[in-house]
Image 1: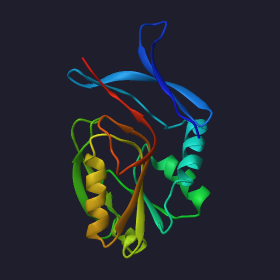
Image 2 (image 1 turned 90 degrees about the vertical axis):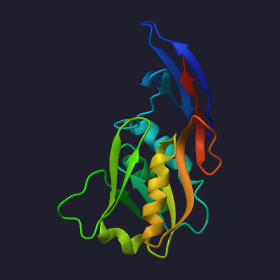
Image 3 (image 1 turned 60 degrees about the horizontal axis):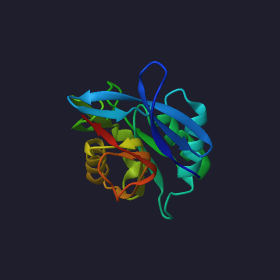
Length: 190
């Protein structure tokens, strides 16, 4: 597993940040998410090559004893699927909306750096037995401010699970020693 980055400006004047996951390279566009704060936008949706490379690498980093994976929808869902396939561990998806079919859902509100507004995280009560009494690894694409991570931990602990690991493709901004990641993305401030 190799990882490297560098800052570039494309022919069209768009600033990008080059990353490499395994043998897959991508130029991430640098986008403003708040006044004077920009991020290198990592979006795995629809990128099978990056998802497979990251998932295979992260599956090797899951600590012994983890029994189930938990991931927030949407962007990390395909990543959790690859890690599940590679590790043989089941995965649970924490939804971003409450659905009418959910039985006794457990919900938390969070503000993510990329959305900038409150969003809901909801665990369907039908998934509680898969988490309760088990060691859980949270799977995400990018851990930045930690808001989503904190809400996921609260939900898991409320239903009787134990967070044994947090794994992500990238951390972003401040260092996050509690997260096992393949690389780190800086925040860009002007």
